[in-house]
Amino acid sequence: MAARIHQHAAPFGTALLQAAADAWLRIRRVQDAIQALLRADTFDGAAVDALAHRATYADAASYMLRIVRAGPELIPALVDSSPFVPYRLAIIFRLVPSESETMSRFTLEDLRAIDKPATRLALIAAGEPFEWQTLDRVGRAVFALRRIVHAMMRHR
Image (cartoon, rainbow, N blue to C red; front, side, top):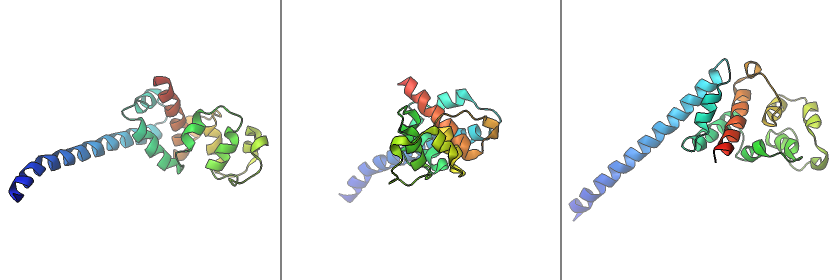
Protein backbone atom coordinates (compact mmCIF):
# COMPACT_ATOMS: atom_id res chain seq x y z
CA MET A 1 0.00 0.00 0.00
CA ALA A 2 2.75 2.45 0.93
CA ALA A 3 4.58 1.71 -2.32
CA ARG A 4 1.42 2.46 -4.28
CA ILE A 5 0.93 5.83 -2.52
CA HIS A 6 4.59 6.67 -3.07
CA GLN A 7 4.27 5.75 -6.76
CA HIS A 8 1.38 8.19 -7.23
CA ALA A 9 2.94 10.91 -5.07
CA ALA A 10 6.25 10.94 -6.94
CA PRO A 11 4.94 12.57 -10.13
CA PHE A 12 3.05 15.15 -8.06
CA GLY A 13 6.18 15.93 -6.05
CA THR A 14 8.23 16.28 -9.23
CA ALA A 15 5.63 18.58 -10.78
CA LEU A 16 5.57 20.66 -7.61
CA LEU A 17 9.35 20.93 -7.58
CA GLN A 18 9.34 21.90 -11.26
CA ALA A 19 6.70 24.57 -10.66
CA ALA A 20 8.75 26.00 -7.79
CA ALA A 21 11.89 26.02 -9.94
CA ASP A 22 10.03 27.74 -12.77
CA ALA A 23 8.67 30.38 -10.39
CA TRP A 24 12.14 30.97 -8.93
CA LEU A 25 13.58 31.34 -12.44
CA ARG A 26 10.80 33.77 -13.46
CA ILE A 27 11.38 35.91 -10.38
CA ARG A 28 15.15 35.83 -10.88
CA ARG A 29 14.77 37.03 -14.49
CA VAL A 30 12.54 39.91 -13.35
CA GLN A 31 15.02 40.87 -10.64
CA ASP A 32 17.91 40.77 -13.13
CA ALA A 33 15.94 42.96 -15.55
CA ILE A 34 15.26 45.47 -12.76
CA GLN A 35 18.90 45.52 -11.71
CA ALA A 36 19.93 46.19 -15.32
CA LEU A 37 17.33 48.96 -15.58
CA LEU A 38 18.52 50.62 -12.36
CA ARG A 39 22.19 50.43 -13.42
CA ALA A 40 21.58 51.89 -16.89
CA ASP A 41 22.94 55.34 -17.71
CA THR A 42 19.65 56.32 -19.33
CA PHE A 43 16.06 55.41 -18.60
CA ASP A 44 14.83 52.48 -20.71
CA GLY A 45 11.13 52.82 -21.53
CA ALA A 46 11.08 49.48 -23.35
CA ALA A 47 12.33 47.70 -20.23
CA VAL A 48 9.56 49.37 -18.22
CA ASP A 49 6.93 48.21 -20.71
CA ALA A 50 8.28 44.65 -20.48
CA LEU A 51 8.16 44.74 -16.68
CA ALA A 52 4.61 46.15 -16.78
CA HIS A 53 3.36 43.08 -18.65
CA ARG A 54 0.83 41.06 -16.67
CA ALA A 55 3.21 38.08 -16.54
CA THR A 56 5.91 40.10 -14.76
CA TYR A 57 4.16 43.06 -13.14
CA ALA A 58 3.49 41.53 -9.70
CA ASP A 59 7.05 40.23 -9.34
CA ALA A 60 8.51 43.53 -10.56
CA ALA A 61 6.37 45.68 -8.27
CA SER A 62 7.08 43.45 -5.26
CA TYR A 63 10.84 43.54 -5.83
CA MET A 64 10.89 47.30 -6.40
CA LEU A 65 8.88 47.91 -3.24
CA ARG A 66 11.59 46.00 -1.35
CA ILE A 67 14.29 48.19 -2.91
CA VAL A 68 12.36 51.33 -1.97
CA ARG A 69 11.51 49.89 1.48
CA ALA A 70 7.86 50.83 1.09
CA GLY A 71 4.69 48.85 1.57
CA PRO A 72 2.06 48.05 -1.03
CA GLU A 73 0.19 51.27 -0.17
CA LEU A 74 2.70 53.07 -2.42
CA ILE A 75 1.20 51.49 -5.57
CA PRO A 76 -2.22 53.22 -5.47
CA ALA A 77 -0.54 56.49 -4.44
CA LEU A 78 1.50 56.39 -7.65
CA VAL A 79 -1.61 56.56 -9.84
CA ASP A 80 -3.81 58.67 -7.60
CA SER A 81 -4.43 62.24 -8.73
CA SER A 82 -6.39 63.42 -5.69
CA PRO A 83 -5.26 66.40 -3.63
CA PHE A 84 -4.37 64.01 -0.79
CA VAL A 85 -1.47 62.38 -2.66
CA PRO A 86 1.28 64.61 -1.20
CA TYR A 87 0.08 63.78 2.30
CA ARG A 88 -0.18 60.04 1.55
CA LEU A 89 3.34 60.04 0.10
CA ALA A 90 4.66 61.97 3.10
CA ILE A 91 3.25 59.24 5.36
CA ILE A 92 4.51 56.39 3.15
CA PHE A 93 8.05 57.83 3.14
CA ARG A 94 7.82 58.62 6.88
CA LEU A 95 8.12 62.38 6.44
CA VAL A 96 5.13 63.16 8.66
CA PRO A 97 3.48 61.08 11.39
CA SER A 98 0.44 59.16 10.20
CA GLU A 99 -1.73 60.76 12.85
CA SER A 100 -0.81 64.26 11.68
CA GLU A 101 -3.63 66.78 11.31
CA THR A 102 -2.15 68.31 8.14
CA MET A 103 -3.98 66.16 5.58
CA SER A 104 -6.51 68.74 4.42
CA ARG A 105 -3.93 71.43 3.76
CA PHE A 106 -0.83 69.42 2.79
CA THR A 107 0.41 70.28 -0.72
CA LEU A 108 3.38 69.52 -2.95
CA GLU A 109 4.90 72.78 -1.70
CA ASP A 110 4.63 71.47 1.86
CA LEU A 111 6.29 68.27 0.71
CA ARG A 112 9.12 70.19 -0.99
CA ALA A 113 9.69 72.17 2.22
CA ILE A 114 10.52 69.06 4.27
CA ASP A 115 14.29 68.83 4.57
CA LYS A 116 14.84 65.07 4.76
CA PRO A 117 16.52 62.65 2.33
CA ALA A 118 13.24 60.77 1.72
CA THR A 119 11.57 63.97 0.50
CA ARG A 120 13.13 63.46 -2.90
CA LEU A 121 11.65 59.95 -3.09
CA ALA A 122 8.19 61.27 -2.26
CA LEU A 123 8.53 63.96 -4.94
CA ILE A 124 9.64 61.38 -7.51
CA ALA A 125 6.63 59.25 -6.56
CA ALA A 126 4.39 62.30 -6.99
CA GLY A 127 5.64 62.67 -10.56
CA GLU A 128 7.99 65.61 -10.11
CA PRO A 129 10.53 65.77 -12.94
CA PHE A 130 14.00 64.45 -12.17
CA GLU A 131 16.84 63.49 -14.48
CA TRP A 132 17.54 59.74 -14.41
CA GLN A 133 21.30 60.41 -14.22
CA THR A 134 20.91 62.40 -10.98
CA LEU A 135 19.02 59.65 -9.13
CA ASP A 136 20.53 57.05 -6.84
CA ARG A 137 19.42 53.40 -6.94
CA VAL A 138 16.41 53.91 -4.66
CA GLY A 139 15.35 57.09 -6.47
CA ARG A 140 15.58 55.24 -9.78
CA ALA A 141 13.49 52.42 -8.31
CA VAL A 142 10.74 54.87 -7.30
CA PHE A 143 10.90 56.57 -10.71
CA ALA A 144 10.78 53.24 -12.57
CA LEU A 145 8.06 51.80 -10.32
CA ARG A 146 5.87 54.83 -11.01
CA ARG A 147 6.36 54.31 -14.75
CA ILE A 148 5.72 50.56 -14.48
CA VAL A 149 2.48 51.09 -12.56
CA HIS A 150 1.28 53.67 -15.10
CA ALA A 151 2.24 51.41 -18.02
CA MET A 152 0.45 48.47 -16.41
CA MET A 153 -2.68 50.62 -16.04
CA ARG A 154 -2.53 51.45 -19.76
CA HIS A 155 -2.22 47.75 -20.69
CA ARG A 156 -5.30 46.66 -18.70
